[in-house]
Length: 291
Image 1 (spheres, rainbow, N blue to C red):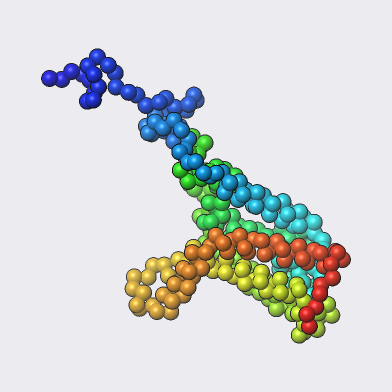
Image 2: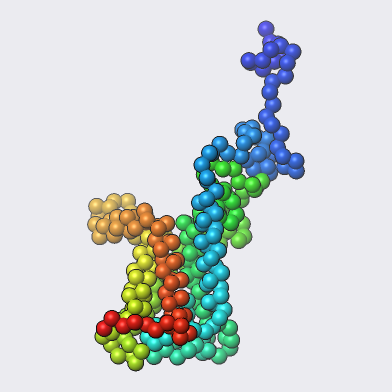
C-alpha cells in the first residue's frame, strides 16, 4: 500500500533534503553548490597542502610578469655587441639601437615612439598565454578555476572558453605559427653571439653559452606544443602510409609529455638571457670569453 513516504523513511517523517546553497546563489547559477548538485558540506576532503602548488605557480608567473614588464618598458640596456636581448629581437622600429648584422628591421618607421619590445613580445606572450599548460597554471594560480584537483572553485557559473576574453584561447594555433619564426630569429641571434665585441667570428663567451641553452629550450618548448603535435600527426587515418610524419609525431609526442617542464625551463632561460644582456649592456658585468 502506498504510504506517501520515500523508500527507507518512517511513515509520518519527511525525507532528508539536500543542503541549501549559500545565500545569493540559486539553481544552475550556484556552481558546485547548486541545489541540483550533490550536497557536500566540505569544500574538499584533501588533507595534503594542496594550496602550495597553485601558490608557487602564481608566485613564479607573477615574478616573470613584473620582470618582463619592467624590461619591456625600460627601452634601454638591451644590446651589447654581439648580444641582443630576446625581448627586443627582432627590432621592428626606427628607435632601436643599431645592431651590426643583427635583426634591425625598420618596418614601422619613426612613428612608433614606445619601446620596440612591446611590438615583438605580443607574439611569444600570446603563444604562452594561450598554451594548454599555461592555461592550467594561471587558471589555478590566479583565478582559482579550480584552485586544485578535487577542490571546489569559488565561482558560481562556468562558461568555459566561449566568451571574451577566454574565447581568444582558440587563437593558440595561430600564435604557434607566429612563434616559429620568432624562434628562428632567436636562433639567428644565437649564431651571431659567436662573435666578439668587434664582430669578429670564431669566438665564444659566457653569453654565447647562455644563448645556446636558451634557444634549445625555446625550440623544445615550441615543438612540444599540442598544436604542433596535431599539425604533424593529426587527421591521419593510417600512420603506415605516412612513416615520416608518424616518426615525427612520436618524437614530438615525447616532447609533449614534458611540456610543463619545458614551459618553465624556457620561461626561466629567456628571462636569464635578457638579464645577462642587461648586466653586460649596463656595464655591471664583463662578458668572459672562452676563446
